[in-house]
Image 1 (cartoon, rainbow, N blue to C red):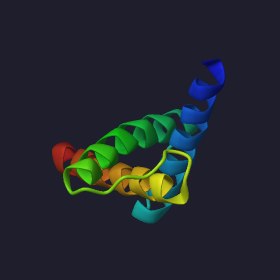
Image 2 (image 1 turned 90 degrees about the vertical axis):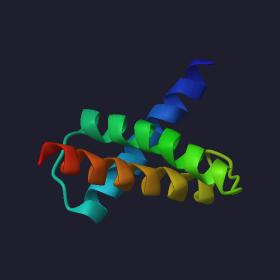
Image 3 (image 1 turned 120 degrees about the vertical axis):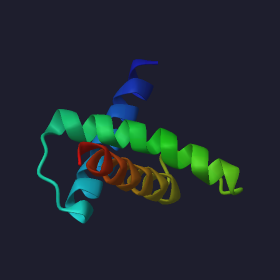
Length: 81
């Protein structure tokens, strides 16, 4: 159980970091983890709606999490303005 949480946090941090590099934001580790986790949830939800399924630890799952994190960054930028 604890290993699953550690893997989720690590993959969330990875997805958040990749999304921050793609979107050109400068943020810290905690924000990357939060963005990655929220993004993976949002990306997984949207992917499920359109019929795409991927394991969390697969390349497809990471790409979905990164896409979701990029979407979260876009939404946060729009709200901030």
